[in-house]
Image 1 (cartoon, rainbow, N blue to C red):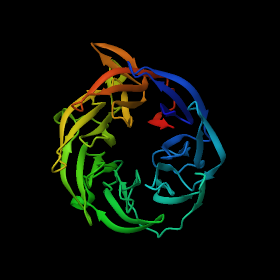
Image 2 (cartoon, one colour):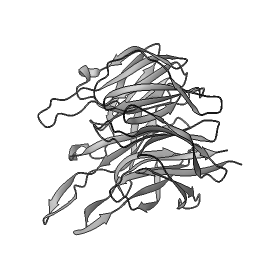
Image 3 (tube, helix red, strand yellow):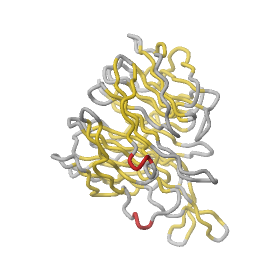
Length: 383
């Protein structure tokens, strides 16, 4: 039997939800508390296993409790920790699995680094594979294997100038990949990496095309995966109102629709302004942008933005059937609504994906985030 669940992470707690197809209602079913805060999760493609990158670190902080936790997905969708967690050297910001499910890959951002860990036949985590040292810039943010399983893409975001420190440029690092070993081949740095802050990438399901969310510039970029990676051939705003840019406006995750016709990007914001002596949200965009994909050229064109009714949309997931999108609103904020200050809680916003790719809001499941952050959410099919 095949079942679909949503899992979301609030601090160190992973919660399982049932998704109602009729109206998008989310029903909490079970929780598991891990040794430190959840950073990112990935499911094994064929086994009932989920791998979780955990850390007590944060932005610019390496952390002292850093792990890969392997969780067994039970028949009812609840999660059970397997064996002793694998200890890591610093905060893992992202975890992925290669295309033949032989290795786990992790990206670290304090400092920027990566590691590869062999998977045993039973799916449990084995030894770390030795890699050549590669000098990376500031704030690596993701590590992904291309669909042909022959290359790895590692976006390095860089940092905007602040506190008297000059801008740290971003880059896309491209590696050859074979049997778990990465060999550095390309460093993509348009304009020497200044004004270029790549965060996440995703790939077209059938064409040699890669789409990149450019966090610091609120853009989407397009690259071709030829013998070498070429681009960006296009860079476009993800915002509905780019001329009204406000502080703390950033791009988040990016995902291509399973049908290859659309690509989605989250716009996240949490900046504040003073109102009668109280800090309230500054009104920036917390939305999901829909781009259509030209079937011949791959060019993305913005066709729709949809409000999430929440704050700081760091994460979202599309179910494998391509019918539902669920976005995680990371924090809570007070906001000015029709002249009144209202509290906007964190939570999970559920959308129906329509035939034309645009999103229809169904409902928001509020979550009391407290002092934690709703850091990751993913739709998982368990068979």
